[in-house]
Length: 303
Image (cartoon, rainbow, N blue to C red):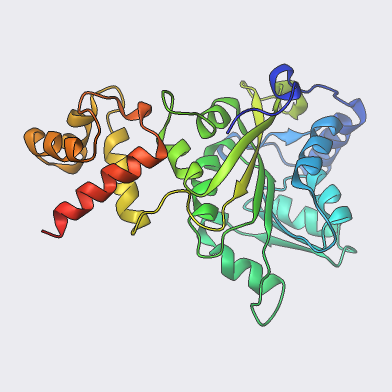
């Protein structure tokens, strides 16, 4: 869950004018503007593109799901290396344009849809093998900022999870994903339960058109075959964790009391049974400590 190499610290910047000009030209030709409401910032830096592709470790046997392909700059590289690419674009104009642009590429399927409304297992099986005998898939995407967190949870909590995710997210989101106890967040717990996240590199704002107001990060998540800690019910586990982070600045006894609507004395007793000091803050707990808190609170409901 640490940052990889010097590239993660110094960032990447190798903007190619031709890529920027190409993006502007495509937008003019389509008579569309980047929509702020959809978080549309199109990647125009070839060096960043190469870093994403390298981190994904693609081969001809891979099935890839790309979320928010936009103008298709990343898509073009994905179809060169993967056996099957499923690009899901919510903007109908961009989805149609991408389909026309790469219509001669048989391994590409472009869907005009909201990824959060598609069940990943059904999406992949429907687009690969009619029998539904899916061997696995990867998610490689420059995620729109506004759906980055829900998209990660959507895939990681799915019945059929990806084997690997390589995604571009806002820098602060990336740092939250890889955080360790002392700086943990709800998103960090949500991701780290299912996989090992690493920041591959930071990406400066000029790598996109139009430029966002923040920097980005490329995050690789190696998804575990099974959750990192043993919890009988993931939804129950996250109910407790969400309650804890509902008031992250408060002591754990107060946050859980508010979030779970339990009396403070009862919460203190349960935390002590879990071996957790009631005055600790939610961000200081490790994944295993959260699991222990959940187990004790879950056992209370069975009495």
